[in-house]
Amino acid sequence: MADQGLSTDEVQSIREALAAGRKPKVVFTASAGQIAGQVGQVVELTDPEVSDEFVVVRFGRDELPFSPADVAVAPRGAGRKVVEPTPEAPVEEPAAPAEPEFVLDTPRVPAPRREEPKVEQQAEKAPARRPVKAAKPKGPAGLTVTLAYAEGEWTVAAQQGAKALAKPYVVKPAEALKMVALVDVPGVQEAVEQILAAERAEAEQQAEKLRAELAEVEVRLAELREAR
Image (tube, rainbow, N blue to C red; front, top):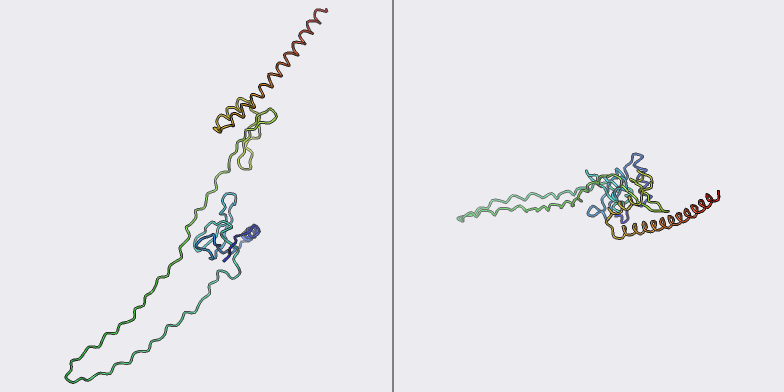
């Protein structure tokens, strides 16, 4: 019985064999449960990203999914049935007929009945079948929506699996704050409010600086007008 499951190279070899139209034989390992040591045929390899049990094995009349740890490459000659000769039953010799007994003036005693030996047949216990595992249906790819802040701008992006649904685009700080308010996670909204407060303070400083520069320009302009 194999103790180790399929390696990555063995899984790739099985995938190539299936593509060539062959169905490689595998033997169930100890992690497969009560069917350990039995031999089956790989009929399909499903997507390993959807389920860890992506090795579909035909065992008897069933086709069940297993993980690579549940099966191993079967050695040569595995699964062949060896026909054993059935032992011949011993031939019983017929018993010799009893000679008649002549008895004078004595009652005839009936001969005891011959009891046939009882043969008790023990029903062989059929091995318990492993419960059939329902194949997990492949659901839609996951959806990820990302709200990010970098270099003074808030951006939103959306991606489903490996497909980008929306590239990062800029949103207003007020919209970003509304989005974060929907996420009831301690600390997230506080972090966003701190970022907005820092941006607000910086914007006010720039506004004060621009006002001061504008005041100086107004004074200079007034002086130039008086000099005419």
